[in-house]
Length: 105
Image (tube, rainbow, N blue to C red):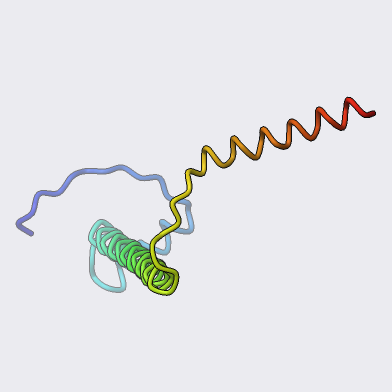
């Protein structure tokens, strides 16, 4: 093996250690070699799962973009609304109604 290896100490449950030792014995390999293979496989599996998730998220963003473009094509220019200003106006109207209701009651 030409790559550099790093020593790592891990604690295993007794059953895990027995199973690894038995598997290594049957395969004529060291426990270390077996653990490295398992770690390599798990890292690859997790990386693939992350890639699938990322691809699914990007596909969802593409669908959202396509939907937006279809809406804009149907409706024309995007709505030009300042949400912050609109919310402030709605809150002021609500506050005025509440004050008027309090004055009557």
